[in-house]
Image: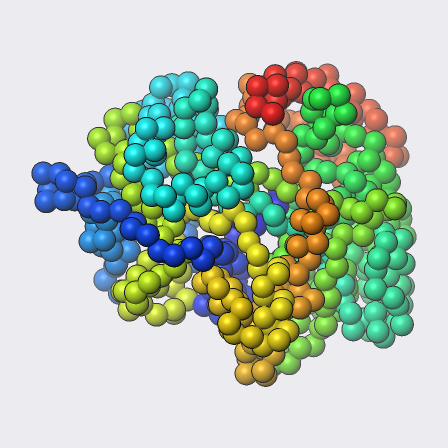
Length: 554
């Protein structure tokens, strides 16, 4: 789904500016006053305890000369500041959700050769619990988590922490994230002006805009389309999710059935109507006929070359659009952002997930489970409020300066803010040029970047202005919260037995039939056949299992 909180998300453009979509996100933290982040625990090694883990060497992490995963300034800082020595059992290239890391972790779990702590998926957490391989962290967390950590981890009302709790036992610590990450619609505003078109307020308005962009070719390329889509339905930008939400359809969510239970969103009538709308658009030539074989970057070439002027995307989308919008120190494409237009008189809700799908677990064999909590305490304290220049080591490395190396990726335990008031604070601060309004580290960084664009010092920071400015992406979030327009998946448990067995084939069938419908290769009524097939091939069993879980957890 919308993977805005995911560590693996990184945009080449932002990295070239010395930040990443995720690194700016990691700083999205509160402004509480600093508290003690933990003291070295007594041991035979003069107050230092050791804990092992496994790591993925993200391609965007660049080491300072003479450093590596086993010896680096960040690990040294943890040992010096909180008395926790981190040892890597193994390191592989890629990201934690990449194939190399996951394959090696799978083998480690199968052979019970796991480190003291490591990140695990919900399915892996369930597997480890059933195999009795990980510790109950309830008492360890209660004893060692700082007051700040306990408050921080409950900022979503406790839902993410609850998702790591099984039968009343805290078995996994969530790598928390802010779930309130909307899909929005992005439109070439210079083209709206050129064609004298109104801003989109309804889905019909947007349809008219897309048709005008496709037929009147405001980019002057000789061939234009109405909307940018790519082959991955749930992509953060250029995906289908925002469009579907405009029809009150939701992708891969468990939603209220009206009778106190849950039903699967992909098989509901609203999904059929959304697919009908896409099929009609395809027939009219509003959709690139090759979208089904293009990834986000490949389809984006049509945007950058002035052939498409509408797309759906997350709040970070301008960082991606900047590849085509800013050239030689000038903004050559003007974009505006809008809340999702609706197909009817009911406002559209933007679907969101729990906010986390990665958990830290501790092996039954680990001698110092408290080390994990100490690492968590330190990360939250430092990421919320660096109080001394030396603490910049956790973000930038030993020279304490930003240089685009992404040293923050070396931190073995991370938790990101579960909420944010950026939408209220930043838009006002940037509009009034009031540097006193931003309070958090993230807000100050974003304000400084946006003001460089506003003041004409650095036009490349256009993307930050479109994210954080007075009419930027995050300025829409307060309205969405106030009007309860975030549609959260109501199932956040580990995959059920039938999900594990059948979900992959069911999703494959869904993607296949949805693509065929959109591309007008089969009639829209094939959707009804898909629904019946989905139920027979395991969907009914999954629904039963999900509702058994829901009865215990709602």
